[in-house]
Image (cartoon, rainbow, N blue to C red; front, side):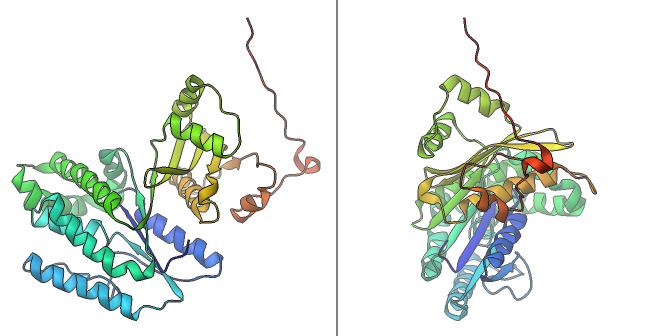
Amino acid sequence: MKTNLIIVEGLPGSGKSTTAVMMADELRRKGKNVVCVDEGVPDHPADYADYDFPDFDTEREKILGKWRSFVQSCDKNTIYVFNCIFLQNPMCETMMRFGMDLEQSRRYIAEIADIIRPLDPVIIYIDFPNVRAAVDSVLEERGEGWLNAVIDYHVSQGYGKQNGLSGYDGYIRCLEERKVRETDILRSLDIAQFTVSRDITASEFEELYAAAGWCCPAREYVDTAIRNSTCSFVVRSREKTAAMIHWLGDYGMHWFMKDFIVHPDHQGMMIGTLLYRFSENYIRSNMSEGQKVCIDLRSFKGKEGFYKTLGYKVMSEGETGAGMEKMLEKNG
């Protein structure tokens, strides 16, 4: 990835903060100078910790000015990794606070995109398909105070008030609509972008198999394989499928990586590393404190070096016995 700015976006609970830190760590391992900044921190180089602006015109002037100042003063030998200040914060203000429509939000975010263009920005959007499940997953960690605050913010003004929404269900409705608008706006921008999701289709599976030169099974078996994988993740670059990974796991002792393919057009761009680390974080999020699990895979010939960079080691026959397989076929 040739960029000076990576921004991770997505709804609450989708894994933005974890992904931002992960990307920063990977870049540092590659010898890059990296500054990783979370949202809402004091002295953020491109944002304000306090969004208590009296009106949108004042806010727009302040935020766009902050972005311009950052672009002019940032170190061009550094990669900055930011969390959610390109889509989430503008959408929370334009849509949720001020009740603006999609096109008004789009124009504002497009202004920000134009300002940051000299930095060759890359947007990584974490598309968690089930909004309610994403929020539910962080409720215990963030607490009752956080929940009451975000519900009030979303339903008592702007979009929530216009649509008569209330309570937790109203908050979820707000997020669902925000996700629709965010993804629509993102697709309309001429800016590098990758979406990480879990809704891979059979046609995308077949496309990546063909790109890797593998012989793909019949569609009915592909559908069955996707449906019965423990978890699957896909990366898209706009409407093109960039990579996929599928796992089988028992959540107790073992996980096995079934299929991991990065389209040749997207190799060498850290997409494979992003996808692997993102899925590994999913496995880790389902582990208890002190728990250990073993992750197994069978490397494609010549790709062993890539897996070594991810922390895997080659197990020799003398150490563990030979890896073995058997193909079954039903006849008649």
